[in-house]
Amino acid sequence: MTKMLRALALVVLAPLALASCLFVPGKFDSALTIHRDRSFTFTYKGEVVALDLKGLGGDFMKMAAEEDAKKKGKNGEADLAKSKAAEQAKRDEAYRKLAVELAKEAGYRSVEYRGDGIFYVDFALSGVLDHAFVYPYNQDNEIVLPWIAIELRGKDAVRVKAEGFARPKNDAAGMGGLGAGLSSGVDAADRMEGSFTLTTDAEILSQNNEGGAETVGSDKVVTWKVNTKTKDAPMASIRVAPLR
Image (cartoon, rainbow, N blue to C red; front, side, top):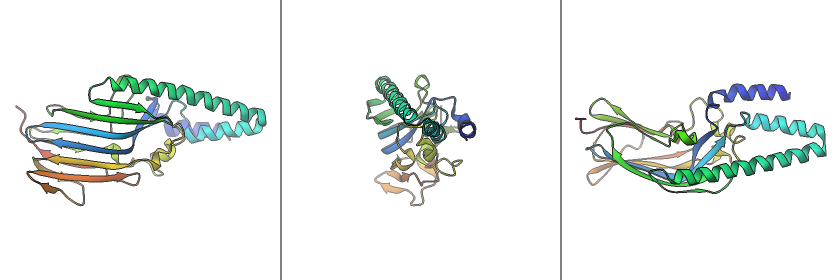
């Protein structure tokens, strides 16, 4: 049984093995403003939940380890408890160091590690969309799966898609449900809840919010409320000034 669980875990998690952590949103508020002249500002304020993938096993490996401990009796259970505590302490120390490193990066106004794999982040960055933009992304710290991407589409359009603000489409049971066993005790599947607001004075070519865009002065505003049941990632295409 133990060997079967480990084998199954490797099959399920192998595509994610290149990164030691997967970072997902917790409770948050995020906003993106895009102007006709291609200037933009992106903000994210709230929780970031880290799922530890180094063990490549999650719930399956946990079940296997507990099964082994039961066979060994009280000594086995005591050893398992010590091992878990040591792993947790090591993980927390790594996350505290990560918070310090991220706080040095452009856009991060503050980064605080609060334990149990949960960070609290205040991020804001402005720029010009003459190139693509993704968040979060930090190769040095193995943050390689961004939640939101702004792509250039032709000479006069950009597309915004926030894949991280929805349940993964290839996850029948919820990625966070599997990820819960990979984190430091946090059930990420039950944690994501927030809003993503797009504001623009440019023409919205398409967007997938059923409520549509609200006109506020000279701007159009689209707000997506997202949680762990959200199936469709927020998406919009906007016509902006042509690239020169």
